[in-house]
Length: 195
Length: 288
Image (tube, rainbow over all chains, first blue to last red; front, side, top):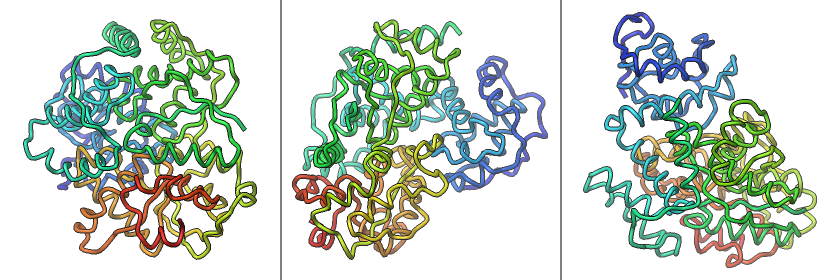
């Protein structure tokens, strides 16, 4: 992955839309004491594939560079291994801050981060419908949402191996149905839209 | 020893052998499991990517169910992602403050509440600290001498909480492996990340991480795991990982309770080796 050469943190003017800056506030509070030591970058197993290193990303967050942040793939490459959180010398919730950026992206930039956002969205939809995730149905809707005709075939051999062992069942995917979790989802939505 | 049992969604599907072998092993060890009634999904890694509050409320519902039974039992969780989510909710409720208030405001819609008494334990925590290598050793019926076993811990049973092992240098599986007569394969990839859902959303990155772990396991007779996501990533993509490195990275990968169960005299049918995707014939001949 080609590393971006622009040094973050030295262009703090402009670029940020106020409403997005507001939703970034929670993430900024989490990493406000960051001393830019780079322990997170040095610990990250996915850093090799990132455009900005985690350390650079935190600098962008602190200087409010919204456009840079949400054109970067860095936070979506966080696989929640928590090594940075464990090692951060300031004990900052680094992995939670990555998740905070994923949450903003899912709400405001779903098209830019289609594969990750679609994955989480379809997973949660399946959970909302059934109470537990139906792995086969969730993957069906994930592939459908990606609108990439080649993609399902890349996973077909694995799907066959799992089916032959009775680990996944073919059932007719259905978008209807509500589980005992529906009231919980609805309440969370109303509390989050109010805040 | 008696626990609530929270299997999680994967253990009803792609990780059925983890569920079945965990139940079989614990039964053989005299550990009693009480299925948590009406349990629901913990939110996995999808909920934290969508909503902070949902990522707390979904696991908290299960803690509330356990508390509502009135039985004072720890909740045993075999899946590391479920464990992390349930543990995070446990800590949030226990610490009180805004998060606890928000969680209970959501749960009230479902007629539930968390008081903060439920305690969440990973299967490896229970096996290594409550059962322990000594008790296990006394129950071994089939000594697995000559096998070199690589303990793979992955991420979320160790980090960020580190409740039962050193997250920088985990060793909790070693006394269990040695109790069977097998050797612990020395390697440093035991706590490396398998890539989790990258394997689906960004396969190139997932394959890179898995290939690194399988390369490090060269020389081991098997890798043992304690998480359905780790198990799937390490067993299902060995062909693609091998092609990416231009070398044969095929390795036996099985769940820790399957391996320990074999040592206790359970059959390969009992621990459902037929459901695994990467168990070699050589391993089957030696261990089962």
